[in-house]
Image (cartoon, rainbow, N blue to C red):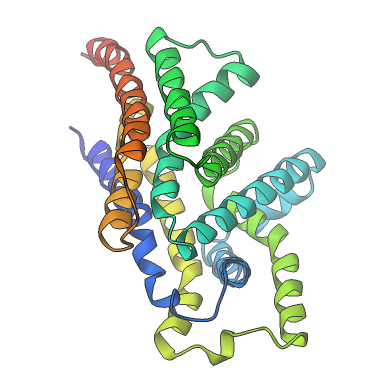
Length: 300
């Protein structure tokens, strides 16, 4: 394992560790009178502030201006921004409603959704193992909706939105920092206007928060941007198949956090539904092994 590959693996693992433990970050805020809507708006505002500072620090202003001058790029990233904002809102709603297990289910399913979108929109071929993986995940979702007694809308929304975001980002490539800054800047006016409207209505609770929750709200920009930059740095250095396996660190940790710290109900019917999804995940990972072997042999 060369030095750059090792660094990339570390970056990717740290990124997914942060994403996996992210629900813990919001626990001190669950006892405060702040909803997912205001958390989302605050997260966008502080992430934008940090992204702009990073663009200035790393002198990416020209790159950002060039992107803004291209109508096609602006249209693509406007769609990215809307989808990303929707994904963040669903995630924060899941946390504040103690639905962390559904969030973890969404991110278990997300790679399978990405494979399906690649087949539908990019003409990518699906291996037999990938087709079986998608079928198993679909069976798991249907099981949860029928015998589990609840359609996992949050999980499906998170999986589909993140898959669509990845698809558009793939078709409209920009460096990680520049792309994130552009997305944040597009969401910023709406977030700021919403917070101002809440202030006029007397519903803004930011100034009334105790010191720790206040610091966590301000810091939400850093914990949003940091993992994305680590992800970009890791993805450039390691194989896509390796990244595909490492990404399951996040939903696995979220699942453990939901069971232990959020005391969520996980009965036998739900367990059976999750097993179908996990079987699909296992098939998805197993299906990437031959490709890695071929690449390793070619490199040798």
